[in-house]
Length: 321
Image (cartoon, rainbow, N blue to C red; front, side, top):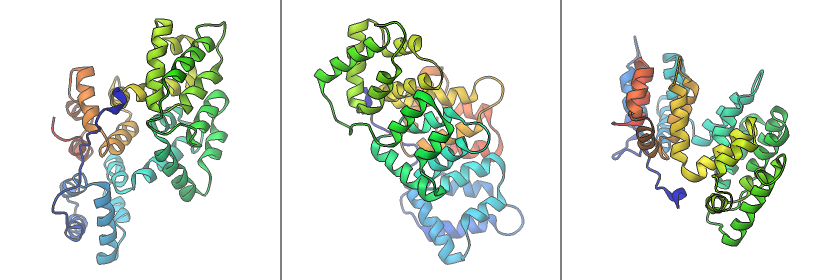
């Protein structure tokens, strides 16, 4: 099954790791006149998140200082966003991004979808627990206050962990679910959105893969084609994101990275978020997919779009072409 692609990260734990040596080297890079940005990139972009957490503890216990505060006072702009993002535990980083997407005027639905659609129940639970700890407010409550309708119901289902565990598969049920999707969309006048979001939020990714195959046999159309003609707005965006993640998560992220760099201007927040959050999961797969889809490497695309230390940090995380 395509869902079982083998995730290959671009950032792995460094061998011969010495948290104390790294902490002191980082302090040296920030002490005195001027900052050695390259030294910061060389250390922090080449350590795993668990190793960075150890560096942070060592920095505090040996030097009596807060490494995040020091980094913030020495760095700036998008380069700072990358480096400070790397210093946060993965679920904390995603919680901060979710909060940012809902804070203030308007809601960034696209970011909510990008973060929540690919997650398994176990990953969602970590995010939900971490969010309440960080913001003293349940994620479900915050989401409900910022979204509405079928989109709100879908996101709520995702974060309450309604999805069946990985590996849950029932071939007979898949035939039935494909028929339910057909009857709720193509097979009737109007669309019963509830059937779509209930099946796509409840079934395991493994089950959904079989459902989509059965749908094509039944309808002659792919589930994507059917959804495009039956759904719209944020609900369509969210459900099609789930479909893409079921079929090939790296394809989903490669497409989003391309969109972040396509046309005039760059969506730096999206670029940073995906590269930082996928670097220890499957960024190598995303790179391979990107090159296949767009006939250029992710590294060359980032080099063309970004500059300075910001560019160097992202390129270090992406790794060689």
